[in-house]
Image (tube, rainbow, N blue to C red; front, side, top):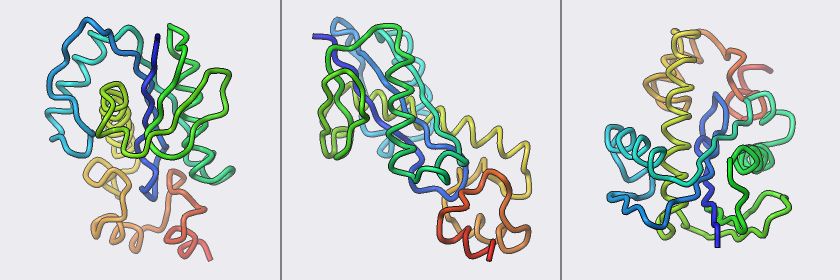
Length: 186
């Protein structure tokens, strides 16, 4: 059975997109070191990301923008990014397994697995690809909006990020529907 693992990165930040990845692992390849992306160093994630892309049957990324997050809410935007990732796969999976408790509404059987990124290798792989891709996007946004230092905190509500918001207010990449950002807009 062709199974795609799916996970997202970026539900909690105050800025930037939510990014999902879908991965169909090659059952013959023996990728070592897979784990939940949050448990891996930046360098280990980058190395594994390259290996996953080389040794997977198919992989794809799906993105929902900060504007889409504001328009439809973070949960729906996460599911939309997952749907986009699945639709971007070069192979059509027979089943999709998703980290968490919700699945996108697609024409393929889906199963939500709580803590799937710690259990299922294809979800671990998707977790890594999503995190690496989102980090790349935030580094690009850092060049566009250097005052916010997105490259350092990736949009999460760190002290550094909150100091920048206090000084400069939000930019167009900030999620206006998120409470801390709403406070700056009222």
